Image (cartoon, rainbow, N blue to C red):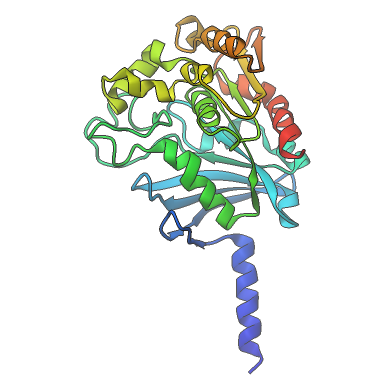
Length: 313
């Protein structure tokens, strides 16, 4: 008679520990099940990957999550990392070398995919800089894309609900960072949501997408030809109108970045707008570095320490 409650309790403990097939209920989103794809012990924490059916994107999505050792004993702050063009959740978790610093500071790192996948939209796989792997962290308004390509709402609303409901994550202590297209995403998420993120940083971000070929292609495709819609997803425009808690922005940029030379990133425009608005930004032009993850892994420790100042304050 006493065996059944005991076994039930043990099952609950095992389920909670391994985080298999967890179900979530919120007022904003329907119940979602998480399926664990992989789990690897790393610096006494765990690097995991999960899959779920996204309400916003109407497709299956994956995200990586690093749970530091401190997560075993209570809630930890969360750093969201947004990756760049062509990337999945795998690029950052396998190439950036972030886990050791995250373990030491007790920070959970969440790394989502960069776009919906397999939505059977005509043209979604035709080019590397638009469609699959290139969601640009916007909510599309053009008919062909608007049902699935809602990465902005996925990153700022659905994913944080999912993380805080199923992991020992402190939803009051969140920061955001990213690389290239993901650096653009990190900047706009912070600027459009004053106070939501404790800090923001970026590696080689697309700072002024309205003025560069990548951004113009993406915005025209997802948002249409009305450039007034583009402004709400351009960090240089947004920072000029920012009104909220002070942001301490950290940006690293490789001096030998081929995309900097090609006029895709335009950091000078963003820095000028920050200076005009008196918003603190530390911009570091790193000699000899390019656009690759060799660059990211060289300075990721600095960025995690930057966020730890605010997340653990």
